Image 1 (cartoon, rainbow, N blue to C red):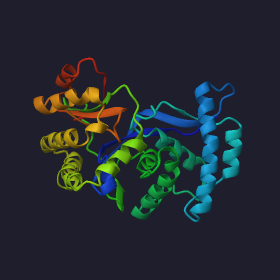
Image 2 (image 1 turned 90 degrees about the vertical axis):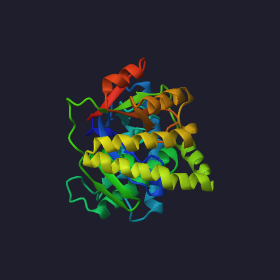
Image 3 (image 1 turned 120 degrees about the vertical axis):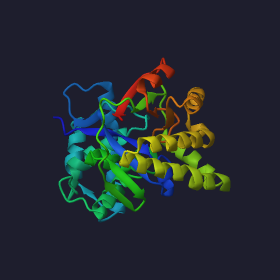
Image 4 (image 1 turned 45 degrees about the horizontal axis):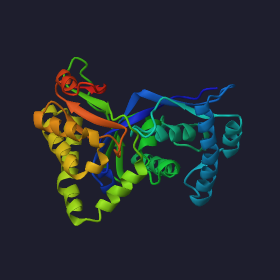
Length: 312
């Protein structure tokens, strides 16, 4: 048995900012994917995943009780499948900021939610917000508080534009220019990052007035501008805003940037060969890069593997 595939996602813009109502733009990334599966001879990884699903069934049972009317599941079928060894077979690296738990949540909702909102419906803003709320509750099991955006992206497999907390819509992004020199790429930090401690750190920083005003006057301002530029295909303006954003993140979110990347981060800002930014909550996992000349960026980042996500 193997269920439908659910893909990883990349939050191009909006990490941390969307907690405080900045714009955000999230896109599906089809390179990594996962599906619910049952094997006759499960591997160690499959057995671990299955054990985690057993605990998850109990968590979903509680959601049903506590959030009456929000979502209900065919828990009998889910329990039976989990007892028969069902697990989530996934190539999405965990702790890398590209939505491994989001894809699992989307797969469970798709298969076991009763009265579910389907992708084929006319997805009004109300339906999208309801899905986001359901997914937020479902994903909180994996890393504390969740916005629900990762599973939403994985479930719909569409780019999502976050205008504010209560205003999200599916959107389209400019077609890729496969011949273009520019690119968005992923850089592997070589370590995993944990979302919960990074978000906790951010919340601690938010208690400082200086940090709060930097977030509003600089971080959110440049994030919003990057989203607009990207959606409208204003590449020149986008890179101007990206440079500012990369600079603001470097000076104010240093603990979220793995220390061995501090020099590379600064080098990008100084040479303009590429600009780096956080991919998800940081602390490890992937770092997101933007360049107007991929060959130049590859030379400058020699020794690092660049995975291209999108071509300009």
